[in-house]
Amino acid sequence: MEQVHLFTKKLKPTHISHTLSVPTDVLEAFPFPQGAHTMKFEAVDAIDNVWRFCLSTRLTGAYPKPVILRSSWHRFVEQKGLAPEDRVVFFMERDEDNDMVRRYTVRAQRKVMILMGQDIWVDVEDLPLYGL
Image (tube, rainbow, N blue to C red; front, side, top):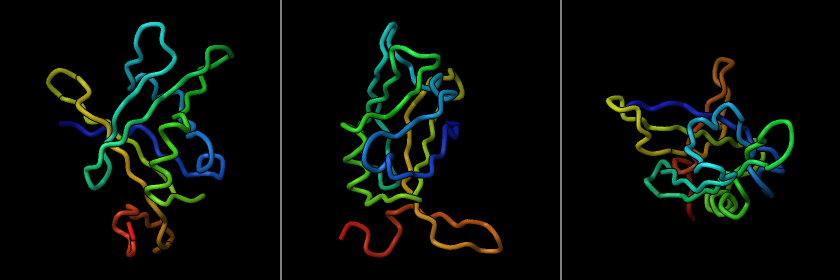
């Protein structure tokens, strides 16, 4: 199983309160049904919880402008206690034999320190008081 990094997004206030914008160049990693502009997918977090997200692209305009809709995104934000300046990281696990996507994973992370000029990020589940 090969793990492929799809994207990392540092969260802004609009990502917390509305939708999560997704880089256009990762759309090929999501198999939209023919003619559809939305698709549902599941992603597993650091503690093996399954999250169901809805990815949508706009119907008009110069480029698709993909977003994860608030209806599926907001629960994740609330459960993880995410805030502006946190980040999310999405990965895809692919079967190397037949190039099929096996699953998506998502990490919610918070910067805990800067060490020797490098940001140190930790999964929010590993922080003290998570889930209390």
